[in-house]
Amino acid sequence: MRLDILQNKDIFYRQNVALKKYNTFLIKSIARHFYIVNTINALAILKKYFDDNGIEYIVLGCGSNILFVNKYINKNIIYMGLLDSIKISGNTIVAQSGAHINKLVEAAYQNSLTGIEFLSYLPASIGGAVYMNARCYGSEMSNIIQSVGIIDEYNNYTEIDNKGCLFEYKKSVFQNNKYIIVNATFNLKKRDMSNIKNAKAIIKEKMISYKNDRIKKKQFSYPSAGSIFLNDYNTNMIAGKVIDASHMRGIKLGGAMVLPTHANFIVNYKNANGSDVYNLIKKIEKKVFDTTSIRLKNEVHIIE
Ligand SMILES: Cc1cc2nc3c(=O)[nH]c(=O)nc-3n(C[C@H](O)[C@H](O)[C@H](O)COP(=O)(O)OP(=O)(O)OC[C@H]3O[C@@H](n4cnc5c(N)ncnc54)[C@H](O)[C@@H]3O)c2cc1C
Image (cartoon, rainbow, N blue to C red; front, side):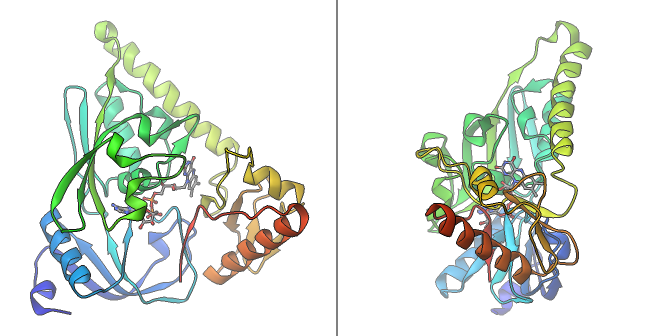
């Protein structure tokens, strides 16, 4: 590692970092090289260093769509959690990518801004949600994003408008390019302000109803990364239904289990390690293929 990177006061480099608190599966892998950046400039310097030297890295938000498979993760990890400011001006919110979605939803609520409630209790960072075009309750990030600020392939800060994000179902331009998302701009609607108390109460009610729905569906009953496999809306293939048809609910492997109430969720029900979850994913893929000839595709990002 170059000395000026190690000495940069806005880049914190740590070795052998326990990843349990950085992934929602609570898998106990260890990162050999873990970087936390404090400024966008520091992020650009670090990215340039990696790119110039052909060094691989992983950008980490809340780790709610990531499976760490091995005990030791050798790839460099850049954690975004310190870039978490949220600024509001009128109906516009600019949120840095490391901010938690709940912080964004709460900020919108406090300012009587509506349209973002569907994201309530999504355990994600802004960056991860943009990258994945997160989709909940019939809406998705693409419906509320005005533009996204990135460090581009030349390590410059650039803004991409909504159209340029090439959003599709669980897809975005960020998945196929060497970009790091640093912020997102949202243009929301102000609720009728003639009665502020009422305006905020309506927003809060929606937020709570989404939260309660997630709780009712037992999404937080065990550590998980949400849905494991993608749906295919072109062929009307809903992964949960296909897995269900292969009678996989409740199946266990090591400490991993297919959630009995949601066939597309694998959970860490008892001290699972990454390979338990990985092997269960493979088992589901095989069983579904043998039963239906459908090849499931992962939604969760597998890091070995
Ligand atoms: C209980 C539960 C419920 C869930 N429900 C839903 C749901 O309803 N809808 C849904 O869509 N998803 C859902 N998910 C999955 C997950 O929350 C989303 O995929 C989310 O968008 C991931 O965000 P993250 O910050 O955790 O990303 P991470 O898991 O940290 O990363 C995911 C991917 O994004 C990349 N990435 C992250 N930040 C950046 C950045 N700043 N720049 C570039 N790349 C970046 C990572 O490198 C990785 O490839 C759920 C997960 C859980 C655990």
